[in-house]
Image (cartoon, rainbow, N blue to C red; front, top):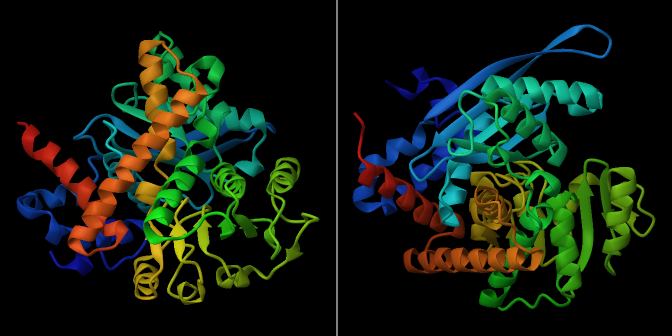
Length: 426
């Protein structure tokens, strides 16, 4: 079959998110040795479910939304990955995100496969009651493939602890028993874990500190620019500021702000909490959206959506270190440009794995009904992230490849080795 007859989601020339992932797998294949015979496993999702979600709106009309749950690979354990509510959600995107979850879970060596879910909806157009009905109907529709030992959803873009509580309750009602372990990222009162909200941002900070040590970059006084200032970017910005760095520029959907002397991060976080974004923050100058990428900084943290750093803006980036807080924020062409410029990119599949690591802790706590302190959780998170980063760094040095390729080498070998020793059934 020639590439032009392939469906778009399998066509490496169709560079949607799935096409980008396929390119990344192709780059790593030469390093897989005898496991390369299994590489097609990585290029095909194990299971993709598309569901219709009809709900009654508050005005009495019926609306239909399209939802997805994709399980990319379950060789190392149950599926694990978030659910996003966004008007631009597509099957290609959810497939790619599920595949990156496979890579990410293997990179930090937690016993999960990769999965992801989404609904094509702008949640800002729905009332709270409509969002609850949407969530409960979606959960019922995907209930045939999720479960504490099958596939465990979590929050992602535009979903939160409340959405997870509705999902957990719906699944529990449908199965006739309270199943706290069916989702992670829940409120603490119903089996959620301490430290979960800040976990992804803390992981971004942790690998940033490790990379800084290895490259001779001093965190104290370093200039940091952050795109996206929610749970991930906001937490990472706060931790870098507390370590003595200066957050000099922040961009989100409400605007782009800049202060060369360093932004007051606690005040900015409070402003974001009250207004929903960084726009209008008094302690900063407004900057044109496109100028953000050229800000003079040492560390750049893209923590918004995928596809933000492209061949068109990668050349402007002045940072020594790019830490990917978002999933898939850098295109392959941009990756090459940054690499040629000597910019060290800490890829999403290791840099933002703090969230799924603490999700794993939450799942373990739910199974045992024994809960840990926040200090214990943070200490275990930091240790796992440090060890994972050290392993990836070593592979990168040995093979003279980028950290992204090194992470894929580590992860793909773990996934494909599991596939090989399990064998094929029947």
